[in-house]
Image (tube, rainbow, N blue to C red):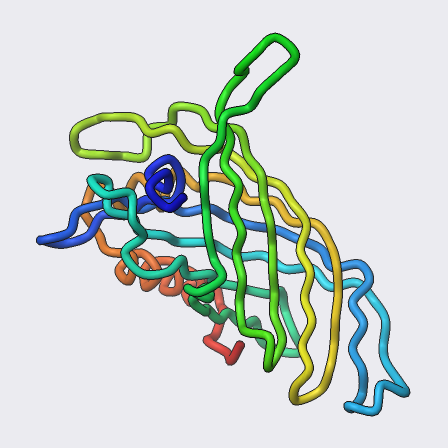
Length: 214
């Protein structure tokens, strides 16, 4: 399945591996968000939690293989007297992306992408988000001017369950939107995934965000 990743997350890497960068901005809302006070599961707070951030990925255009795992950068609004951001790599063992043909009543009607992103593991908890988006030709800023078949947006659901140090779980909806600015800037300058993550974090710090722990 990963051979079809070339249609989705792509990134510009230094020699000998060359790819392209694709950045998506994501927004989501967990409703309900259930946070237990301890592992006895006797008392919990129940509410709504919103998330925002960026997903940065790198792929070798020749092989269609990911060069590492996608990085997710989360940032949140003002908390007390400061704003925080933090980032984490997706779980390589459980994260996958693949393209598929869309079959309508009269035959093939297009191509879509299914993205399955997982953070954490079953021992400490997990965060999963299956997404779907219909592909279109998009200018990602390649030096050869070639457009790529990727979704301009993806939508799906998300589910989170953490067992340590204090348990919580939640479900909700999520949307990813193609970010032209960061994607095209990265590919035009042949930046790496790490360079692009650093750029986004620097821009967040310029807006008053401080690094925090995930």
